Image 1: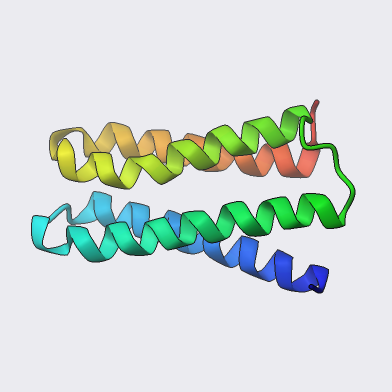
Image 2: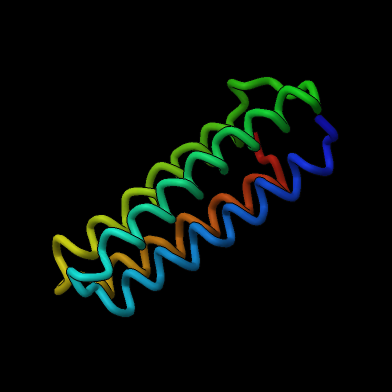
Length: 114
């Protein structure tokens, strides 16, 4: 597959994962839980597959430090939407945590500090 397709799918799925995670924070209503969890799950899977596809196409080392940081950020962000429904009183903390996950991932991919 073309590398631009991997880039597009990866970035778009990360943006949608982040958007739907913050949507879960904004309105953690039980009747909307199914749809939000489904979309975040699909976006999370697409993020993972496209990210590893990019690593393979670009011949990057899978054990680089910046890749590990992005994996931790991905896991954290993917799990936060479910937590918003289980503990709606902690949404402020979860949104701060989500912002930190996104910032760490963006920093890691652009600067590759390790």
